[in-house]
Image 1 (cartoon, one colour):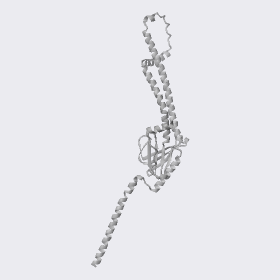
Image 2 (cartoon, one colour):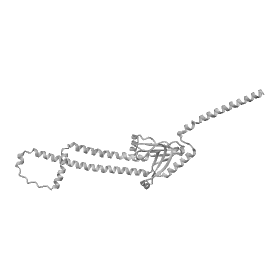
Image 3 (cartoon, one colour):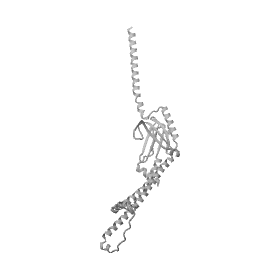
Image 4 (cartoon, helix red, strand yellow):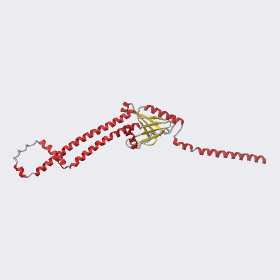
Length: 305
C-alpha cells in the first residue's frame, strides 16, 4: 500500500527523476543521503501533529454532544411552553391549587439567570444548525483519516528524496516534496564550509553541513539584507558530517591548486587570446618589412659608393 501511495503521490506532485551529477569528472562523483535518525525526527514531529489533531477532534466531539443535549432540552422546554399556552384557562382552574413554590437559594437563582441567554439561544436555533454542525464534524474526521497515509508518505519521501552530490568541481543539493529545491554550487565560488549540530542532533548522532558560495545577497533572520554576498546550501541530517566537510575542503583545495577556474568563465578566458595572436602577427610583419627596407638601403649605399 505504501508503494502505491508513494508512486501516486510522486505522479501527482510531478516530482522529477533522480538528479544528474553536476559538472565534474565521472569517477569523482560522491552521493550522500540523510541519515535514518533524521527520518525518525521528522516522523516524531508528524506523530505529535496527529496526536494534537486527535485531541482536537475529541474536544469537538464533546462540544457537539453538549450542544446536542442543550439543543434538545431547549426544544423540549419550548414545546412544553407551547402546549401549556394551548390549554384553555377553564382546565387549569379546575385543577387543585398547587402548593406555593419554595424559594430557591440566591446562588441557584443567579446560576439560572446566567443560563437564560443560553436557553434562549438554543430555543431560537433552527434544527438544521445541529445537523450542519454534525456533518462538519463527520467531514473533519473523514479528512483526518484520509490525510494520514498521504502525510506519512510525504514524510517518508522527504527523507528518501534528499540528494547530496559532490564532484571534483561542484556540488548539487536537492530536497523537498511539496516545494522542490535544487541548488548547484561551483568550487570556484565556494567561500565557507561549516558543521552545525543542535542538542537533539548531538543525541541522535546527526548534524548539518552548511556550504556558502559567493553571489547574491544573504537575508538575515529578520528579513533584512545582511550585507554579505553569499549563497548557502545545507546537507541536512547527515551522520557523516565530518567526512563530507573534509571531502569538500580537500576537493576545494585541489580545485584551486589546479587553477581550473569557473567553467562559466571559459569563454572569457579564451576571448583575450585572439587579440594577443593578432598583435604578434602584426609585429612579425612589421619586423619583416623593416628588415627588407634595411637590405634595400644597404644595397643602394653600395651602388652609390
